[in-house]
Image 1 (cartoon, helix red, strand yellow):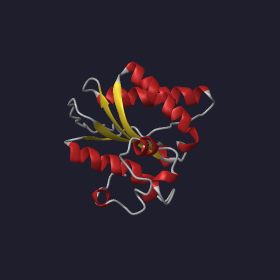
Image 2 (cartoon, helix red, strand yellow; image 1 turned 180 degrees about the horizontal axis):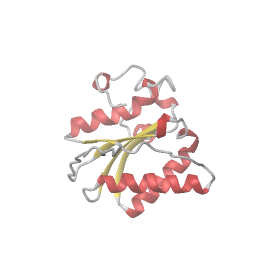
Image 3 (cartoon, one colour; image 1 turned 90 degrees about the horizontal axis):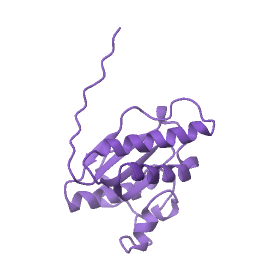
Image 4 (cartoon, one colour; image 1 turned 30 degrees about the horizontal axis):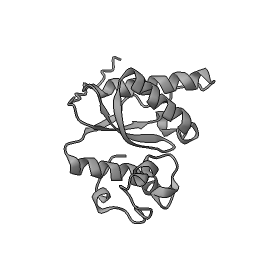
Length: 168
């Protein structure tokens, strides 16, 4: 029996993009490899330049907000997944690591950007990994807090702009 792959259509614009990458069968290995995740993001940027806005690494998925130098954000994602996969396989990890597809959302305006930043930074609380975003070390929340974008107690309650977003 021949299976046909769905014909997904992605739209490419010179705007920031929010992506969600999920591990194969949602196996929880990402957090224990967070240093390698970061290194692979940097190496992907060397191949396909982008401006990193935000990220959060959770056990079985990650959210990432970046702005590619060209409009092909899929090349950035592919370079990241390939680099991390090769690094882990060289270290003895076996089997498939990623779901084949990924979710993407092109950021429409400043309000949309801020909603997605909040969504990223509140996500560990939403999934029950911590009680405050400040307690989760695998996120860009700390860098944004140092810039003054978030207070120390931000996220003690679910932000209203995040409550209705269903992206996981």
